Length: 94
Image (cartoon, rainbow, N blue to C red; front, top):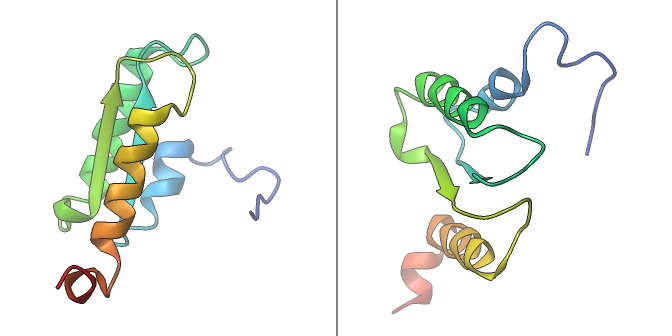
């Protein structure tokens, strides 16, 4: 992962990741994370949604009632999205 120093000074993380638009972007958020308040997550979701307004199908902001984790339900959701977006997924299921 490339992380240039100072990258988030001119723009916060939501705006940085939104630069990927219209590339697929799933964001899984744990609402009970003690490090990141839920209100901030919702604000970030709104900013990213705005950046993806011309490609809403490419962005998924998913909220889970969970602490800071990447538990089984979150993993299953993430992997299902990856499989569904795979270019050959239509032929793989035939």
